[in-house]
Length: 208
Image (cartoon, rainbow, N blue to C red; front, side):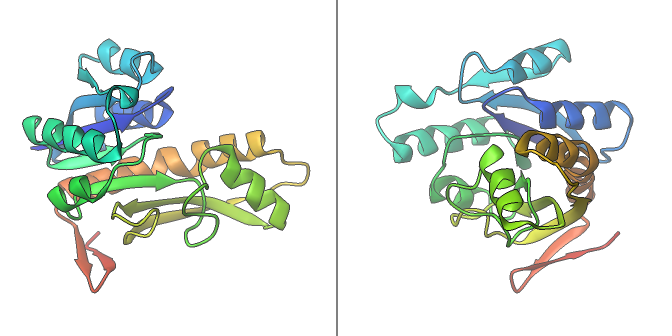
């Protein structure tokens, strides 16, 4: 049984999707063993506590720089014996110290179809604002491995979502969460925990 550690900063809707999927028996071979938050008031911590999951808080502003914070996060993940690290709304940048310690063992969900609308500055509503400004007819979500380059790791799963006339960034964000993020993130976690994802030449091969 693999130990899944989830990193959060805010409300934890993606964490809740993972918790719910685990309860339904959809995450095979893994268990959420710890939730680490970058903010002490993150509601995601309440979600974890309500489900009997261990929590830790590493407050970003208590560290002098990204390197010090990343080192502390890496050490916490090693202490928790993390087999898989899931970014679920972590709004703090971590450097290569963490990626190097967990190569192809860290995954993130991004609210667009990478390589569109990704990279530095593309987070939260900014992603959906950019997609609507471009007039795309479909957007969606991508689950990918985390590397030291933002949103550039090997893609694991993607799911497209239709953009509707009259969409706002908020309505598009909600639809992508409900129709894509909350579905493909638990699926990717389960595939990982079953050792069904291989990375070959920077591309994933899924034995599904």
